[in-house]
Length: 441
Image 1 (tube, rainbow, N blue to C red):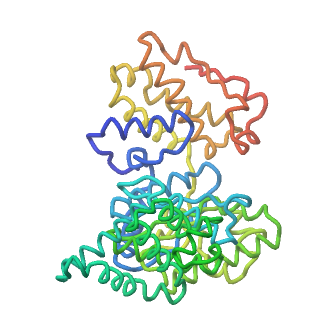
Image 2: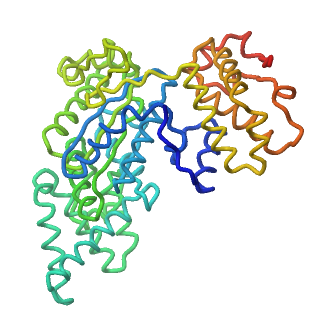
């Protein structure tokens, strides 16, 4: 079952979702319009988000095979966080670009991908500017005169960042340097100092000297900076920070020494979250079952395995959504068909001739198309959603919408070429099934 979709959907939200599916991508927003089968998680996860908004912190691990919808799930949950005025950041873990054992790089990617309901990535500068504005408003509300405003803002800055400064004093120093440069009209220095605050390396030495900071952010300083960012977010009106570390299973393919460091960094992050160091943080990782259960992944570090241990021996219907791990079981033929019908209805709601859409792309046709796409991938229904939705939107619905005489039963032959498949999909698709499949309806 899916959550009820709003009866009125804006053209912009509909277009954003449909355009992404046409490209074979997971939409960045509007995921509530497409959600199928996630209602069983809503109550527990909403309660966790509300707890984080009140000052708690949560760590969650999402497990599922390729095609089970992990990216969709985390973006859907991120949208629910944004609705509660959280800031959101989605980070792809990779050996070369964002190695998990280098937390300074993870923090840098976090600030680069930071988004709010009002600002796209990177929203770091608007957040910091809003924080200083809030400090000024608090000072004025306390009756401070204009001539004493700068001094009172400095006092409030020090007071709000007292705890942060114990671990990362340079975070407060950089904020002071940023404000000072803005006051002096030195935009270049202000931008450079803010980049350093966001973890960027190789910031000009002159800008760093002006702010009284040295060197680049390191592994341990990153945790202090994350703590500082959470403080700035809270004081600037945001109720929390939702962070996704996606595709953590890539750790299985790195050198053993880097893998061990990354697993230990993950254990450290979990412990810090559970210790209460990061109030307002909802941290999610995603990975495959092989990562969580295999000897090249979590099981390689016993303390980490203990922290993530979750019972999945029962029927998936009885999985505990409050547990540290959530299991996504992937699509069945029935749920894939239901998703297709959902997309068809969303598309028709903005089409010029919705009657033609529903007549030519009826439920039976959608079921047959879903079966055919899964067949082209070796019968692996769980791997089919991305390609199925791409074909449904781009090859079928678009044509029915634009050409009055186009009938997919007569004029469309499903063709799956290797160039449009991902590596996983390509490995599953046999040469014979990928040449062309005709829907006999």
